Image (cartoon, rainbow over all chains, first blue to last red; front, side):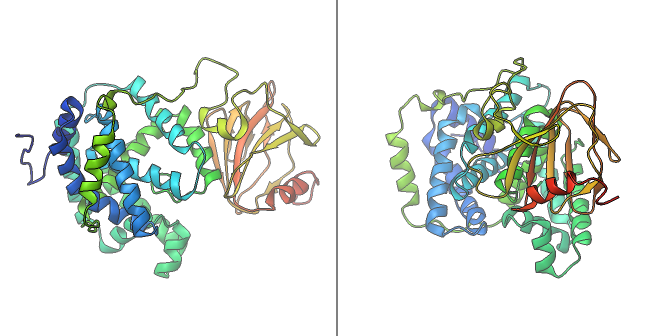
Length: 190
Length: 209
């Protein structure tokens, strides 16, 4: 099978997803798992849940990927973005025991399925990922650290300020600057 | 961004989700924020899963119905054209219909409903009669409000349906509801006893003038 294309030595995970959607390709699916499973585990453990529970969520996230492969739209998200959303929503669902959370998220996603605007090709959004990678690597260490604490430890601005011993105001402005840079790398401003 | 990184409490998340359900621009913004999360996810080293994780997943795949990829059940979506429908993310807390809301009187021209089953922080609907000026007040904590119906003005501007106001204790304001229809908003606050205190202050004229 030749779903792997080389671009900046990155695998085209969207093509793997397409294979899963089109013919329930188990090999492609397991390659996605081999690559992203441990990363999801890192993310979930970082959100301070027990490793064994994190593993269960990784399994559940991957099952959702399998079941919903047909809903994955490479024009709207990278595979990593999609997985991040799925894992985050499962995390909130399980850890916070939030009623109807997943249902609400699915319905919100559907709003955009109805109004999806064509025009952005998969290749373009894949390229977005490459620009974004560069932007993440170019962040000043302090800003990169704050961004990671925010995304991967679910820390609020005040918690980050406390932990780094910095005034809340400068944490907020650093995060805003970092976020603006990353957003610019996505090539779209809201 | 806090929504994307799961650092908001349930009550605040509900208000943001309600806003997302009516604001395509913010959904697009959330997609971008999630794209950054996804990028960070793929750039980090993984954490080894326990041996046999692949085999367990494979076993689960085999147990899946074969047509599974196409049979994902569609969740019920709100009918955007139904003027009586609350934003769908609020259904679990307040029900689906404005008509069926069970308002409690808390002051002249002011009614509220507390959400059921919110585990963190506090979520409520607030209804203020049209053309009413509330006393100047501050907020004892963080508060996130979204206008559902009607409108109000304060020194921060004009707030109409779909708008969100992010208030903290530094902001002092005196909302004046617009004439016509009652102003209904959904609000999340992070102080357990703040609501009664806030209402008490609000109903006590001139206290902060």
